[in-house]
Image (cartoon, rainbow, N blue to C red; front, side, top):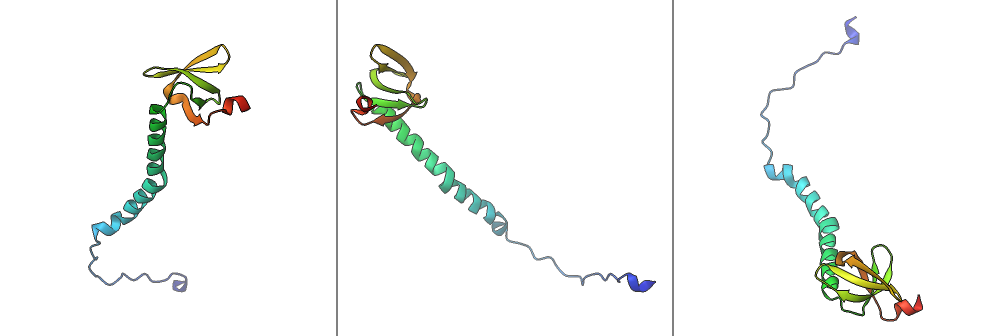
Length: 110
């Protein structure tokens, strides 16, 4: 009956080697570096480009909004932009709702 049960022997006593704390945090550091270069840095770059585009808006610029509306800038205030989306149709939007400045003549081609 004893031949079905294997004998369990204790491992020889030894000291547990202390691991360098830097080695244990290395995967986290590498993961943060990957997140920074793949996600955080490009998002900051896009946000900076958006801010510069909004600051550079002028009356008469043709723009595209986040909602897909094309219009011509009619007036600019501190937080809002007035767009003329058709002759006689004026819409007031927040500046952050503008996603792109289009080349001149885009509205005539549409």
